[in-house]
Image (cartoon, rainbow, N blue to C red):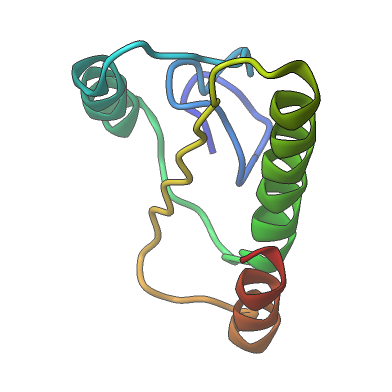
Amino acid sequence: MALGTQKMSNLFSLGSPVDGKTSSFNEISELLSAYKTTTTIIEGWGPTNLAPIVRYFGGLAKEDHIVNKQSGKAKLYRVLVIMTDGKFHDMPETKEAIIKVC
């Protein structure tokens, strides 16, 4: 759950967990800075169901690949960071989702 909100979300942009805006970074140092900031303002909450997030993220990556291939533009990379308390409530489904998106 993002602090300052009453809405729980298991998926948010590193740079903006409260307002849900998409973040992009030009350098790894920017990504790491956003990670450090984000981890200080979010609160973990269960249950942790990762399969839907993996499927969603995989769909975004597939769309990016198609657009990049068609346009010939520079590659776009997405980074999926999973932060949990170690308890997955849908482990078999998550494993299957990871295999399918890879």
